[in-house]
Length: 281
Length: 312
Image (cartoon, chains in turn blue, purple):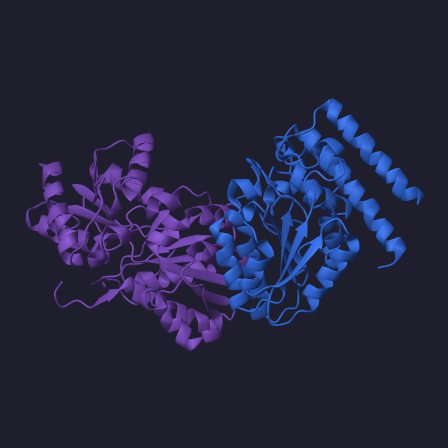
């Protein structure tokens, strides 16, 4: 990745964050915290890693992403909009009655969404099914799924992890967004999922532990996942919930709350300043 | 029906999958460690590479099937009704029903005729659960021939389908040239005094009951409803208009199944007296299937008693 590419990714990720703030503000609801923590990964996946094409949205050989932590739809939607799947101007209609931007991802209404999700623990199984489907049909597309660190408290996640390793789904990449917070507080205190890396390794995954806000590390982990054969991969990314908006960072309260008009302005001013700095350098 | 051929519809399911698998390379079968019991082992032997055992993890299996369907395959996810409709209800609802994916659920061991395993495995709630999912087709074939036709129709139908099959052998009364269509009820025999609307293994009981009633001078119409949803409303309304009295018969809770579907339709469009025969609001228990069916009133004798009472 060149310096110019990295700069462009950072700029795009900042715009994704602005999209998250704009969408949740427009919705007066939604989940900004986990959308912002995963924004850099969303950006890298859709702008660099995945073989997707807004002009051929249902292409049989495209790579897939299943947002298992479906409540972070604002992050996915902002990324898809910026990638050209639908107009960025539509983001504020999130959750509005009759808007196609449903509160949780809907594969039948939102262009670019590969699976309807929202009920935690199910998306990773669907992703494993897609990966197995690819293997059965000798297709070489890859399947990515992003889970929350609270989400992996769901038992079904471990059923799916077993399935992925058992069938040697090396076209499956499981990404855990370890932002450390869930609705009721710190994941370690609510119901500890730790040690996450050790558990994934024990389940047979090729695991990378990275900083989820560092594009070099994201790139290296995804490259390692692509190069790994005979077993599935997992990426545990340490992130900051609410990343990019000062008053949301590391606050469980911003898991599922929208910024009001005043908070919206503060957030957008901060992100505009970050954008200006990125563009100036 | 002592000399009539008897086959469990789970056998039909396995055989139909094997036959369809030969024609359709996109058909895949998923199991949760029950391939022997669900009879999908028949398919597995013929097409091992297209049989995916998911282990004892039904919730994952249902969602894996959903994912596979998005890649163009036609998955048949198989397990006991208790686990397909019960344990994995929310997975079926959110990962198959809501996105309206092309997944077929083959649920064997439905109803009380599971027998000796007892109440934990006797699912009498699956129609109720599956009926409430928008866009879900719910089928409950009555014999071997209908079961095989139902599996073929499910493959050809675009969208989610739930099929219930039985563990116990039941009489085969359809001819080989039987024509099946999703959503179409079947008039088995005409009658004018009372109509018996039955599904699954209760259809054979209804046929027996109608014979007994005929000897007593009571003319009973017998209707086979394989597709619980969408319900063939016309055949039910016609029966209500012609006979004026309806009996429903199903190996399912009287709550939420065929009986309630018929009552809901008739109360709005053609109110007539209806008696529902099914499993009352109670759990089953262990015992031989035949004895249990008799004990829970899922028998020709009980249908006859109810019909006599209604007609007198």
